[in-house]
Image (cartoon, rainbow, N blue to C red; front, side, top):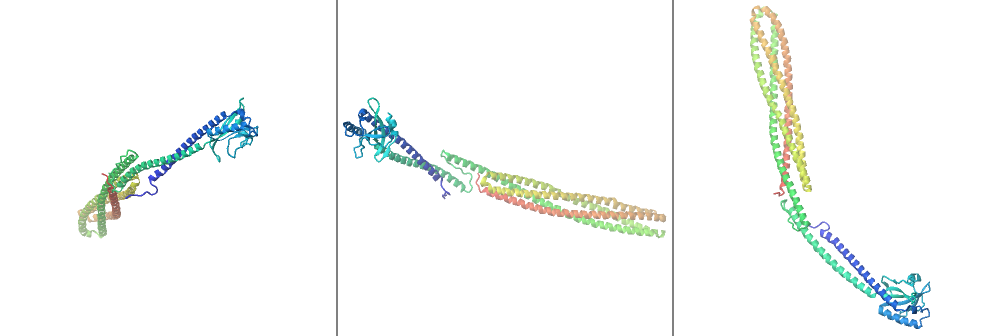
Length: 574
């Protein structure tokens, strides 16, 4: 489809001023030529007038002319000179011939060859002042250097001094040379110059039109090739094949170089788009793995929370058992005051206490081992949180690569100019998504550090609790067993034993009080650990949400990469 220009075509822009220039050149050349020819012909006419006046002045006798005055019209000298001058006038082509004389203040006619009624009589005043002809009366000639157009015709005036025998100026000969033939030739020459100028102007415009037409054909060929490139579904592999040997060929070569540069840019964008797509895929896969690991961490935290609850319940049972032991010892202490008659019953009670202590000690040891194994297992599982830092570092590295790719895409789009604005917007959006991903990864790293710190604190508290169980509770059971054995071995000396037992009972009560306080502290520590585990679980939930957000952004990055690749695929690059 042929497109129309918006204002004025290049052809008109070239032809109009060039035509004006040709017209101006033809006018200048025609006027200049005519002026030179006119000057030459006027100069030739002036020379003819000067020559005719010179011949006439030499033919006239100065002594005779000197005799002509105001009353000389009827004299023989006047008539003979008049006849001779009229003959000279006709033979030399002079329109008007006359002689002039002066009294020093005015100029007067002498002989006038005019044959009409306008003939001037001798002694009539000449219409030119003496001052204007003073040089001629002093012996210098005057030749008019132009053609004077008057009502009497086209004339060139010449004034020649007429000398007497003694070399004095007897009179002045005035000749008005007829330059009508010169003016006629000038008119003919003017018409010829105009005709020649018109022919040259027409030829120049025709040649200019042909040259501009050839240039426009080459321009249309280039424009047609460019139109094919634009409307050929983004085929950047085509080239302009223009072999004119002029600037059109250079323009075509530059357009081909531009197409090659754009093709190279599009290839780079295509390659970077593929890299971005692959990177987005890896980010999504890594986030899927991170989400699974975070879910495992959350489940581990829930298990640890349940274990803490079980530990708290076990400590409650231990506390109840200690309360029972405390009451039993209180009863024993009370019974020691009743006397030795209760020794047998005390022995039986001691045996029963010994048996319960052995069982409770065994149960406590087993429960402690189970708790230690469970807590250590949960703590080891909770250390999987540290893998979040590694994953976060991978995410930050990926976002850095994405930022770099976005920057490269922005640079390549900027190089592409107007054609790369769409790619610059896409690259900018990719950079923003990468920045958001980096910020989310940084938050994940912070949360992961908090979780790791909480897990380490929990591990320390669990170790303290287990140490307390091994050092205090088991030692208390062991001491209780030793006391029961002493009761059984010293049954013979019940009184002394009762007294000692009273002291031991008091000490045991003190120890039991210490155990109760320690159990309370352990219970508080376990509750704090439970709260820490709950916080870790909550943070794991938030971390899961953040990872999902990052996964959503990564999906968006992947979609942007896919759209960018689709845009690049619109062009044929190879």
